[in-house]
Length: 145
Image (tube, rainbow, N blue to C red; front, top):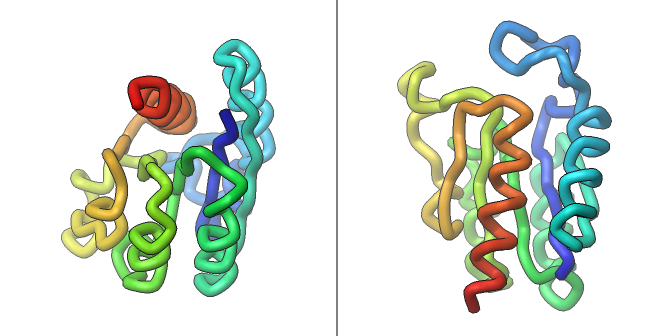
């Protein structure tokens, strides 16, 4: 089983970016943590981060024949990207949306996700553990098919 983790804009700044909201771990720290968790589940994981919407769309499209599932943290694109939503729907790969912070406890505009309806579920507010929970959720879902 192969899972692709996609990360949107500004997540490359984790560890220094608003640690009160996003924690002190870097994206690399989270990736290393998830690799260890994936080994326990006998799952192959790969990671991709971009600040550019079109690059994320391209990566979703290219995942169609390579990955069984996606875990996506669209970051700010959660609330604005019809293109990412459409890409998720077009490839028809099961996806779980994740967020480090609880977007439902933040500003009004952050409470709306354009991308979540294109996913099988959403995990929000558990910090770096949102990534682990996303991995477990997508793995369990794929095993149930």
